[in-house]
Image (cartoon, rainbow, N blue to C red; front, side, top):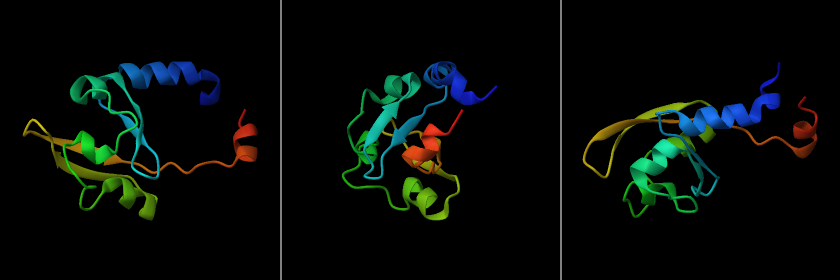
Length: 105
């Protein structure tokens, strides 16, 4: 059965997993954070991703931009606001045109 028929289930899995997840738009604005990420950083939806990490400007070697350039997932160790380091993964998901979205079962 196609995943598209289980959107609510997929949302519940992402929302309740212990790993942190966020989605950003092409301008580095956070448009979604799962519960684990909100618990760690507070609700940063609508803010620039780098401000969540207490930076004034976007990160050098931004993995989000790199994943868009290469169409591949990127992994980077990040220094968090608490002083610890976390592994961050950036993945590029192409936007589908409306006609393509409508044809998904």
